[in-house]
Image (tube, rainbow over all chains, first blue to last red; front, side, top):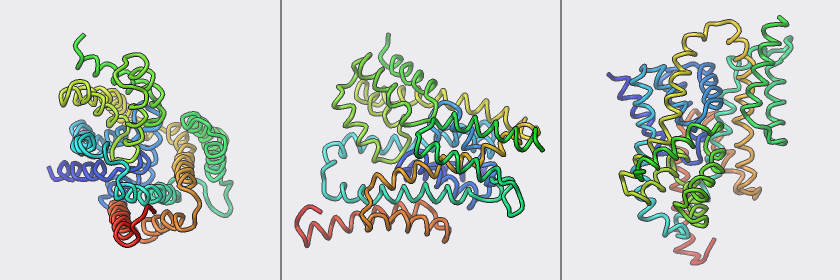
Length: 184
Length: 184
């Protein structure tokens, strides 16, 4: 029972403070699920993100359903997704009534001016947090460091050449199979 | 056809066929909601997108809520939101059930060893793009750096960072309004 209440509370918070889209929410989800409640290891969490990215639909909904399932079964999956969406119903109501006519308001403008760089920092931080030995399988001084190479090449491909993320994940998976499976 | 059912179906299709989340579906929403169904005008649509980008929550669900609400009130909002969420929930739930079963498979583990570093790259890349898009004034670059420091180094919950950014925004708005009496 307790785990369902916690699941509701965690995803309600994520939905309520989820400024800046899916990736920004990931930083909150990572904090709660991996660091705070330790429902998942950092490695499992990275797997969830990869799977959420590769299946259709928003990454935040996908990861909520997935985390909910692994924490509390099918009911947990629906509960987490519902809790994530609940704040939106409330917020959207106020947005329709108030924000649309006040986007030029002095306070609203200033709040967004500070929120945007802060959420960018949130996303960067979660990237750094996932950069650990669990997710970089062969990192170390005397190793071949295939994972570091995959990360670097993917970064360049995504940042400079805007390569589709799903394609990048698929190629990286293939590289993993070749370098950690076939060639070992 | 009943309007509520139409809303459900339209957003169901959008939810089922967009890989890569939020912004990837923008084009599909625009085509079906603005061009085909003519539910909203194009200018209203882009205004809506601008507002939704700055409020918390899942981009796709918020869009569905707004358009549903506009056409058929709260009932329409719920139908559209359900339509946009259900496909991803079902698909990811099946994947989660399947993946939990096959996680111990050696080949799957090898593939994910390659995928995990790519996930890290896919998170770092958009955050840098976001930081870049807020402009390189050195006062503004301090905010994401402080955020990364607080989360990565001090282990502070991202929720507090967001609340902090909102408070700073309001304070700056207040000070500049009261004492400077002009636009920042």
